[in-house]
Length: 311
Length: 320
Image (spheres, rainbow over the protein chains, first blue to last red):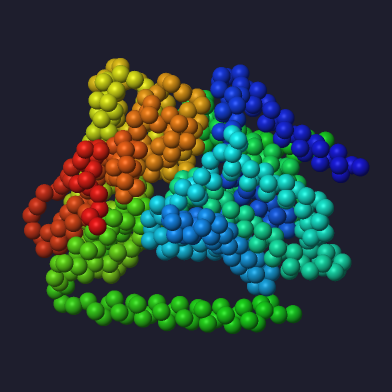
């Protein structure tokens, strides 16, 4: 099966880049390969990982979601507002955070499908609306005084960071769903050729609504995890998070034109970006150079990967 | 085939009409209520989503309300120097008597100052300078803040030890000056070593990740962290607490935001440096009124910084 081989090469391309950089880092620093640092990297990639899995759904339908960072902030603020100690059970703020994300995602989906507005424009609008709502809801100030039972969500269970467990759980569910569920296959069909999918009797509207809402829920989850991690709901948090998330998905081999891409690819993309961020700090690279190096590695990795999968 | 589905077109039409009517109304209200002899102050705030700036802007608005015959219009530049420039241009066309500018950036906000001066409208800079000098500047010398913070570290470590520094957004005047102040102290104490320094862009989550990475890379080699603002100091603090090594490291920030003050009171954060937002805001309004009435006064007015530790935090905590 040629398509399978192509897929494997895709994965190996990025995997090789990840391993090479990892090898370089373990030779140049004595800390990179330590267990505590790898746990550290895992903790740090979790938020971008959850976002990247969510936006994979949208990118697969040939859409895009630029509102991720702003919705992270709004969900975080919403969650923190209901998380003051002794006021509510811990499940309520979590639910509120997820529901906020879901509402934003659903709104994006409705405007894209029923409204017929381009996803780029819809989610660009949502980006500023959600950021504005986060500022209104919080009065422009970080929402502090969160209950420890919620902030503990950023802690560890048996030495494993809980955010990582969230990321892993989400990734596993998404992987099974996109591979084995009918609706999951429909997402690929809609992204690959919308007219053909419609002719085959698939409700394109429902599939897209599902993809945007799923992305919204996961963005809400990322917002809750970030609020737990920083122990506040920050209205100005998450700026440019959508860029890292979309970069991770594209590095992982998902096509911006839709219809092609895998969850495993996205996970590898997330790991590569996390590895670069961590490695540059360990190597004490100056702030100015960090930004340049990161951009070059991201574009270089995708180029290497595409070249390899063509040959 | 319809190009646009009818309900959407209808909705858009109604939305646009509403927007136009609303704009006309607010526009009329502004121009018609301008009374004879009233002083109009245009105030462009850097970013109302930043806690310190919000506090300063609130002080400007509240204080202007206490002055009879003064009307103040505040706009938010949301950290965008381009947007700020158009706001200043709008103030010029509204014929404001004086402008208070809380600049976004050292370089990029300079044209806004030049534009006001060319139009002959006096301009007061508050909290941050630009390349062109305004007619008055009210602020605090950020070099002092960096100096005070690093001196506190030097004192705590008895002039010997490793220090990590977390920068604000590179190139902002606060970042440049706070770093310069800190470097003066490093020059004074040869035993004080700057182990590493990076930017976390004033952001708590970024400072937290950076500190986690530093704990991996430099554990045991640093005894203090100086963050250019309190948000980042709180991020560093959380990372150290999660790693269980806060006791080994002295952490200090700048700004004295509410959460940092609480953390100092609880004995979690070691210290912060108080920047007097209310003093700056009121000073800016006073300077603006003086310029509008063509009264003489000092061109620069520095509101001093103060070190806040557990001993004196009570003076700074908000009164309930």
